[in-house]
Length: 53
Ligand code: SF4
Ligand code: SF4
Image (cartoon, rainbow, N blue to C red; front, top):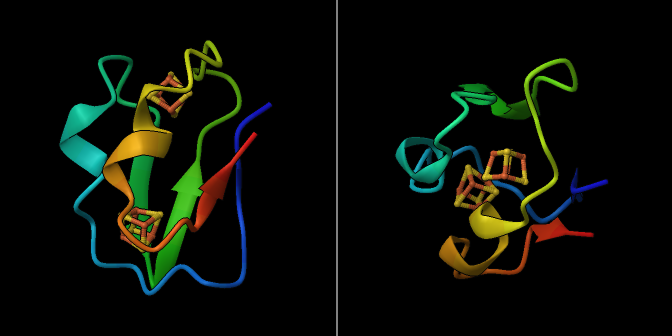
């Protein structure tokens, strides 16, 4: 599954690219595991490689 690592600064740039609305920021990014289908689309939108999986 896609995971957020310690590099995340909570900028929110990746949030609107999740078609399942599984992403939100609360200080850092939080992935709703109930909604995430692990498509990995969000990974390419984080410019600092804080998403991996
Ligand atoms: S994962 Fe990357 S793009 Fe998404 S909120 Fe964190 S730093 Fe920003
Ligand atoms: S892997 Fe896909 S469904 Fe899961 S949070 Fe990223 S964009 Fe959304």
